Length: 293
Image 1: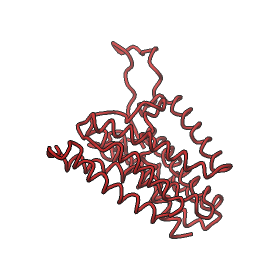
Image 2 (image 1 turned 180 degrees about the vertical axis):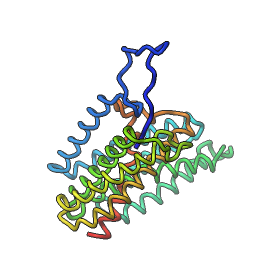
Image 3 (image 1 turned 120 degrees about the horizontal axis):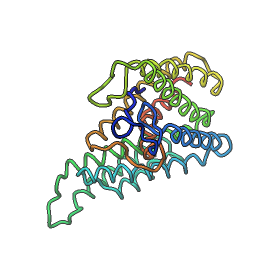
Image 4 (image 1 turned 120 degrees about the vertical axis):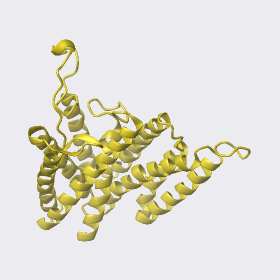
């Protein structure tokens, strides 16, 4: 969903032959495609042959993402509660296994209470905490943004056609990204939210809606074996939420004055940089399919 003119190259306008080749969206495209395909194939194999391993994959990914976001927020001046976030985040994800949404809610609220006390007493009982409200708010934001939304992505494996539901999430988000990227690069001229993410265009959003909805219709018909009109509902809602999720992370990074949350994935940034649109999408897919199937 992005559109950005290519740069002029090296010094005095000459191409810099030593730099990695980047796409018009500002990424090392071959590396990004390679990493994306590898991750996608790995997820498909897990869902096909060992869907319960999905819990382990998500828990590890979000432990890393929590570390990335916490580090960036601390560098930006917010002293978030890393250990309660790490342990509580894992509790939120794993409690969904035996207890479903009740386990998620209880683990989330319990972790919020722990964070409140943790930040209150972080400097001991003889000193008042500094920037308590800001640090507490940032900590709870991370808890809701990462493990709480992620828990709905693992919760789906318990439902009928659970692997197909998770695959639907992945496929529709990929379709949205591909449609948005292609339309943005080819036709993008009108920035959608230039103050937040200058590279996103309305043309890119239109491409995401078309390709994402087509992907949703196909997955609901052929993977979930249900009515096509469910895909017509799911597609646009998911695309809009995925786009807004991407904008949320863009604004967080803009506030922190950084390009990426991390550097773990070549061409993609950090783990969190690949999860921005998946997080709200996971909840949307769970909610829509739970309500309509």
